[in-house]
Image 1 (cartoon, rainbow, N blue to C red):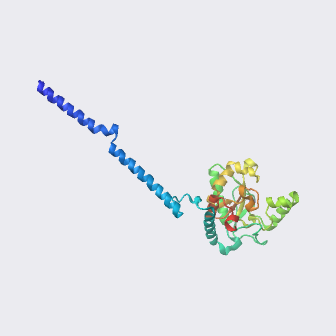
Image 2: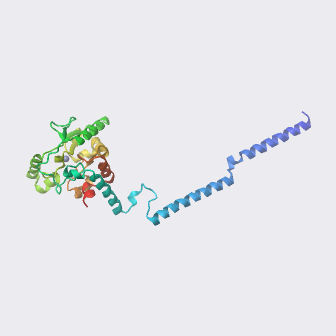
Length: 277
Ligand SMILES: [Zn+2]
């Protein structure tokens, strides 16, 4: 190779290295123009967000539909009551026989009321345990799904006649006095068990008893979390004894239909709060 050829080759190598350097430059230094563009975009985005927030503040609208609880407490409650009364209206012609009926000492059932269309329960229930057919079918599904999840539930009490409730209630009064009895047991006519829509559940680890400790068993936790999916609610919650008039009963479920059960499960409101106040 003569001197001239060497010179040409060096020239080509120099051109190649310079081109490569220019081509790769943005990879390690970043393109200043591009960076500025991103910065600007980010500022615009932040600006837009604050506009949305301001607009919402001024017009009293919620930018995020999930933050419904930020509505004023009163508006929120009215909204829920409206939903409850719409759900209730579907069964309004059935009166006290409706699956959504409020049954309490203030709203008792007639002494001679015996629900029609009851079915006998077949799974881990006592002889002659009966519920309204719709509730029985939902309870069998609940118990089967709980079992598939390893939770074995037992039916302790379902339909009770007016006469049986009267004997039970009188028994409570005799053993603990009237005031305590009224917190523990419903007077005849006021028990949801007469409606064929209530069930008391328990499990082996609490000796199949109806006790608060059921709440902390795997079975009790499963019930608290999933019962609404089958149309049942925990009717007498822990923090609502001043609303329901009854002590906490994690074992007592009331069938009320899936939509109402979901509303009650998600809001933590009682039937008294949704229907009455
Ligand atoms: Zn009960």
